[in-house]
Image 1: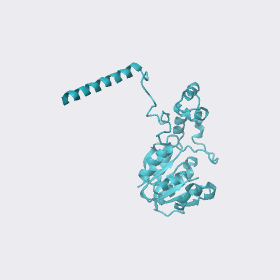
Image 2: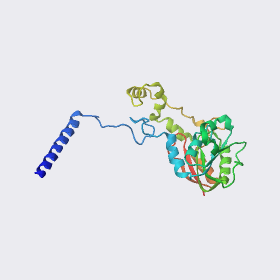
Image 3: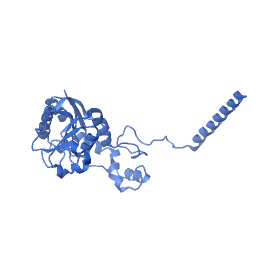
Image 4: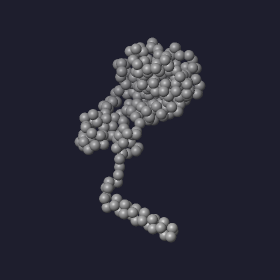
Length: 279
């Protein structure tokens, strides 16, 4: 009797499953196949939008700082500015961050941003690239995000040579730099158009109004393409991008005695990051 009951239940479940399956077929949902986004396109929106996907900055934090910075590390950061990355370094486990910047601590308002963590930052205004305020062989980790993109080859070369003296053997470092080919490849990517139109379109980014706006304008860009003559431009206008390029950064670090672990460290795409280590 028990066996017959179980058999009847199983038969009923199969029948219900068959009905459900057929209902999907009859509904003809998502004709052409469901596609929310292209997983290999890092710039494309999906129906998840910001619900569950990390920002590029947060991805960099988890990919670069968390795996390679030792706990209780003594960190050298060049160009902390307002302290976005400084706070990330401290929250990631740095015991002390030595920040070198061209502007004063008060000018950047970094203490207000760091709050109670401000005591973990030793801040210096630089007059040259010697890093003389930092003891030799005392740095466990090096970081610079958004600063070297505004430095010429001459400034970068001097900083890199000085950094090598300050870092301990085996210490890892990361520098964000500018490469004209990488930059232009991203800003001409059609998926990047969304950044220019999102503020003008109401509703969620996957909404029909946005798709319509993007389809009607093939020339919308998040930023302008950089002309070729900017590749080796020597003008030292403050704040401009110096597109020193991947090859220069790799050669510069190698010449100083570093091992280049990865010249194009993901996930930063517009302004690449180079990963290196003192050997």
